Length: 130
Image (cartoon, rainbow, N blue to C red; front, side, top):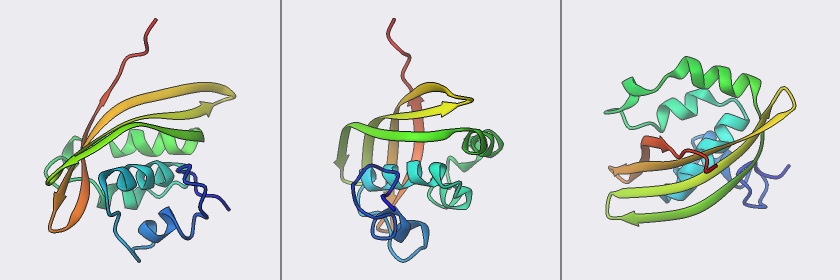
């Protein structure tokens, strides 16, 4: 089975390695992709584990769970990814559907590397252009 993150690799050799704990995401972009796959596979524990402990209290885990339960994740598009030391930024679009209606979640996420591991810090949703 192909990985939901769009890498064209099998899930087991891609995000499955991170979800199982066999490996840690080596880049901010890899962590972003693995977090998208975690939503697609309803791996909420992984999302919690890869969120920066300093910002974990700002995450609405109940809303994330509801979204993961209701949405069918269609594809991920990475628009930009950069790293500078222990800081990373990834701009992406997540395409998904709920009740057969399609949506796009456009976000710029920030990441922080601590003790050699990347963590999601925060995300800012970009408004759709009219």
